[in-house]
Image (cartoon, rainbow, N blue to C red):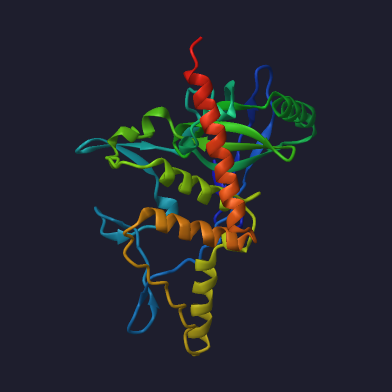
Length: 297
């Protein structure tokens, strides 16, 4: 069901259709993301010979080819049940060969922790053009997303379908029981003053940006690793690492916040007065709101 489509870190998957409220739309699935990380292999350091993992049958004590390997489930200690790809394709489930839409919900009702990788859903042939476009337009105007179920990699999964630039996107989702309760985290117990909270808010205001584009949000680790590999290949000196800042021991939280605010406003070309003025406006608005709430009805 899943096959590599030739690009590193991407997959393509074929479904007969996915089912909206009425009828079906033939589609096929394409990766919406790519992995640009540098991949390493294992080598014998003495002679740089490639170290590989060989697949050996324990009973015959010999290496087997991929065509001899299949899936199996250990039902008991001495009983293994073979399961073929055809068995998986013939599962008695409506989602075995289709992405079935279960309903529509507002996007802000879904916790982002449950949303995973994204895949583009492309219409499969001219017959799918009109119903595909209809669902795109309807989802776009409704400001809702579709919740769907589908089979992938040997299990039934939950998914989210949304619209991105007139293309349907399927996001893998975690089932409710796959998300741990945040109550398991031992949160700190500390007293904060209003001035400290205002300082943190000023820092957030100073670092607010219009979008997620910019040179500071690019993968610098991969770039640095590529330079190291190129230098070693050409037998040149390795690039020098920048000197890390030496943070002092933070004794005053307010001083640390003020320093961070100053750095943020300097990077945005703002003055200290701008930040204080914004903070003062928020304080005044908060006091007015509190005063209105305290008045007797």
